[in-house]
Image 1: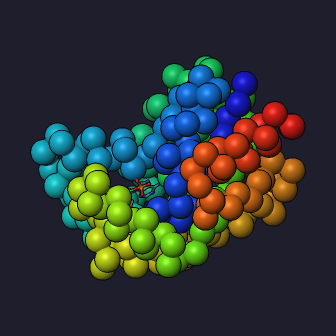
Image 2 (image 1 turned 60 degrees about the horizontal axis):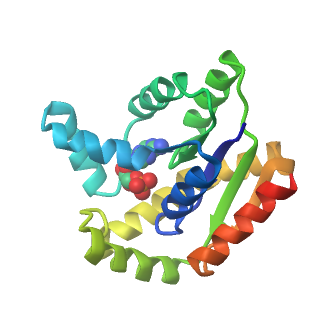
Length: 189
Ligand code: AMP
């Protein structure tokens, strides 16, 4: 059974790869960004609050994320890919405790790396294709800074604690090539 985390800045292609690999391994793809974007459709007080935070490119509170992820993972017995979570050290502490309570562990971590110029161009392209409100030039910088200030600390932590399952992936390659590189690692270990 494979339990996987994908890390990487916004626009690195983690969502695309997570979707492909989840299908390939026949496991669940848990994108916290997608789950939150679905919640926005509810149009209640929580969704109004979430919309403000997300459209500005800031992070939603750890409590909201931890409760979303723990309720989803409680029902996963077949393996999963976490895409967009954990994004803060507090979320990673919560995840570790939660996984040990349910006797599960992470088997692979893929850290997709890409430079800021490339991802800026990718996000602007995605914005014209998907119409995401947080895909505009002002918000990209905030989201990238959130990544540098919070999430990169989390991936560094995992790299240090779990070096044998932590894999750096070059996100500047073509989608198919990136998928191939990930599959090679899955086949090897
Ligand atoms: P993504 O689709 O992963 O880029 O996420 C889109 C937005 O959802 C982010 O900019 C955050 O506002 C919010 N979000 C998604 N995952 C998390 C998380 N783990 N912690 C906090 N906020 C999150």
